[in-house]
Image (cartoon, rainbow, N blue to C red; front, side, top):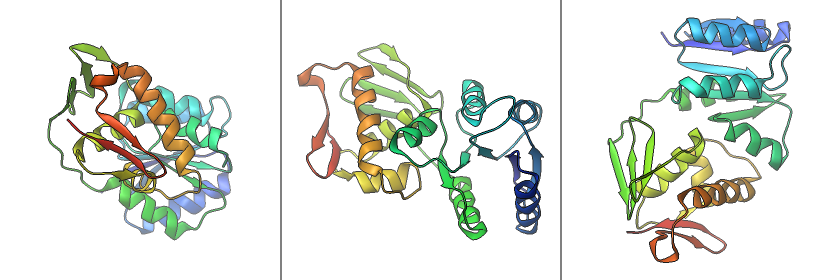
Length: 221
């Protein structure tokens, strides 16, 4: 049975989600502030976290950042009323896998959870020109230089490399990498790609990821 953690300060929402998710055959634990939620996560094993954005004692963003310092794989879904491009990017850059706007339907949340819990088989190493990626260690080197990426930057880079030779549209990327649909996909993807390129710091002749104007991106050796 999959074990879920809910970190949400509204008791009514906690009880509603806990009851509904237990009926869906999930084991559910809950905390009503950020500090307690982080402590629970650090002391028990969870398969997924549902995390409110605005929390007492420690915000959802801070909890997400702390989790990602030691855990790069456990899916995190933000529960939030925030919906601007900047706020969306901020949440995803901390390492969240998905977000769902309040108010949301329970059925939609269950589907989002199922998507994040699907088993994902993947190869251990990926390469693109001078870029070498170790999937298991979450490590990237460029010309033997270590480069540090956020959780979602790493997933986006891996996605483009796995799809070498194919044009990846912004819509495809947001659906496949984040498993979500929202109206800001162009702005969000471009922000992440700009950050990835700065960190890779490749010369023009070494840049194996090209922008396809008006469409998306393509990686080629």
